[in-house]
Length: 92
Image (tube, rainbow, N blue to C red; front, side, top):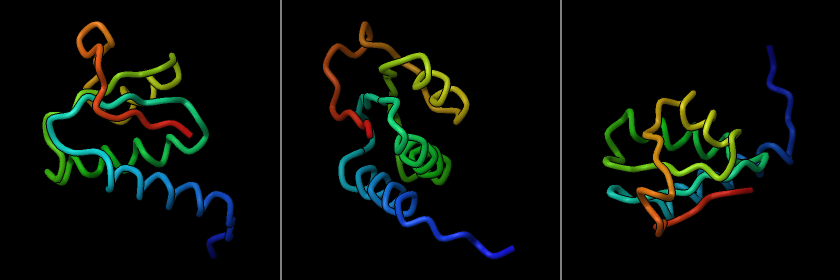
């Protein structure tokens, strides 16, 4: 089946991947928002962790939906109590 081209979704995905690649490093606490673009970022983060390109990253959700996304992608769930200062936060 041919892929349906959706310029808006393609732009969201490119934005999310670029954000992760440019701003998330190993040994960080990362805030995860619940915007429509965050799914692409979380999937990319999970892939980078599986590939060993990111290590020791804690993920702090901003909402119940973000918490579920973190859990569903097998990422390390944390909290603001554990990390009151985040290194980076992603939303969109």
